[in-house]
Length: 502
Image (cartoon, rainbow, N blue to C red; front, side, top):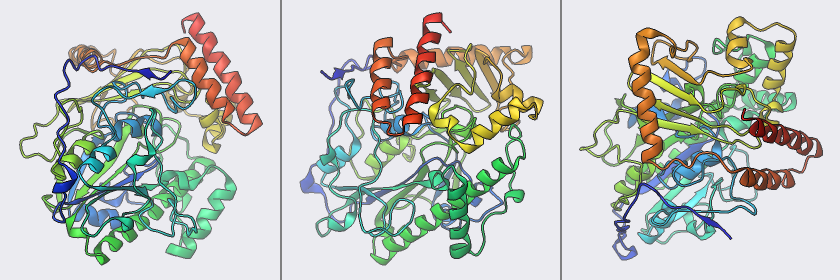
């Protein structure tokens, strides 16, 4: 039987007022999201200098750019579960990566539904795909037009999407479209894939990004493997930018652009050792650019926002009332009060059981590690299969990493609390939690995070029984025998750590 979860912070559901289909008219704006996998704000409008991204830059020039937008979760399925409901993933029980797919099922709390369903009820055509019929999410020609990535950690009805594209809607019917792009995943994780991307870049753009030209975060060595990976990642940004440009040109050619609210964002930061799956800026800081009706041109906002706000602002733009229980906010509302704090959470990712929470304010990032006796680079079949992780482990074993890399990546334990200064420490390398000068800030942020956990009904870790159900389900769905065996060994280690209280 599915497990139904209740929102502890919601005592009364105040109703979900929805404009009916009969009121949907041609003058209501279309809503189009670009949702990009595994990509940080490495766009020239965000200060990236090694590549040019003219199409995302154009969106920013013609719209609104947020400089401090953050994911509430740094991994795909939990991010998308939060994104599509406008709720913290920790409040709806969807906070463990790739959960609720097998014997253990998750049902959304009463009063919460995926917003495509809400748009449908308001008369919108709902669609999810590449935005370019005849092309896939990586920008490659295809003869099969597929629905785009969903990856939700709860039971949902596929009927909430009418199609892969807006072209099938009735004349004058507004649409809600998600353009799902592979983004950073395009670069792959093998020499063969890197070489293929390099050939594509030469053919399409004249040249690929020079590995020696890139700048790495200070905790990564300037090793040929890591440099090649990062340059290929930057080329995936260029490919993504070109895809965005083609979709925008399509909207313009069909006479739809000026009546379409375009929202561009990514689902978390770059997939790297300290990026994806972790709560540092490398994993959670995302680009957010909005263009369309009612949005000023060439504007920049520096206030704190969360990715769950995209659901709320999109409903509001369509004239649909935001549910009283929705935690995302309409950050485009003229009466919106800037947030004093934003939050993020990391939980089990694959077999890697973890619990990390964070709160960001104007000056600080505070991180709480609930399992400090576990290392940052815990065993993970997914991450350990990447060339960059294998190379980092080789360099670690050979004693060839810097003291900073050793401390941040390969310490056998983690601090229970971390505190970093915004702006002064962009890669979060200097932990101030033990610094007496910041003791007051540490106490305040610790209390603020505790209050958020309580107020939002953070559901915390899985029970041992649920961990077994979820990991067994994922092992059964893993086709590669070696990967399945590595996953199994890792899961046994995590169960042992849990028994030992580690």
